[in-house]
Image (cartoon, rainbow, N blue to C red; front, side, top):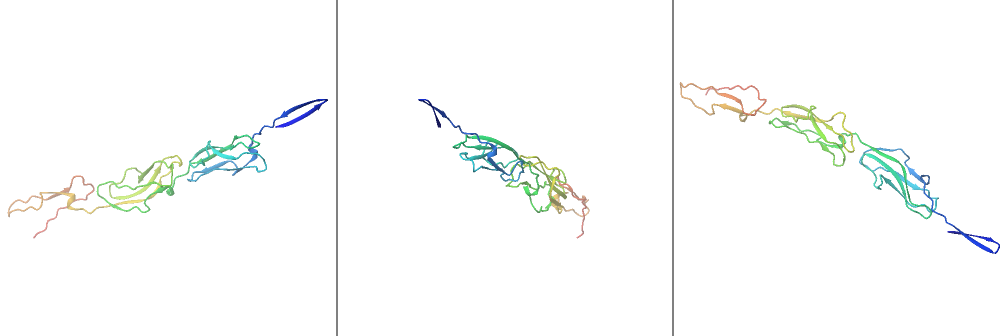
Length: 238
């Protein structure tokens, strides 16, 4: 407090003038980089640096806030950036809004996926064959992944060649795929036919006496066997 004394004849009077603390302003700060603050999601932290004017005495320390928190943002979204002044010798504490920081969603790609670099060929066995594709362990916020085989979600069973790709839905940090992302080629080779794939009637071995009518041997695909070619029964003489 400052005391001011004034004399008037033989009477002395005194008044007290109080100096109150001032409010800080954005002009007292240097913010880098300058706005607008726009980034694309890349798993990294993003933020701004704020420095107070060193020539101003009694200005409190400054903390940068993102949506009211000191934690630097990583995930896609919009964040209100503010400078929080602590109370100093000559300035009161105050929170000043500086602008908006935006992290946009990234486009998904092969770099964000774990998948077999070489898809091994398989042999037809009547079962569906799949290729495992998952999000990379370092990636957060990737949408659901659907593996496609020649453009459909149905895993292949039959022998043939299938183009494998993935479709990804929108996630917290990534946009949805516009076009499917190619992964590779899955080949289902034809299997070698065996007796186990056949139903033979009558059951072999079978023997006949001379002059007895010989029953025709018939061989058909066993139950559940699909895609077996035409079957011809051959006999040999001994």
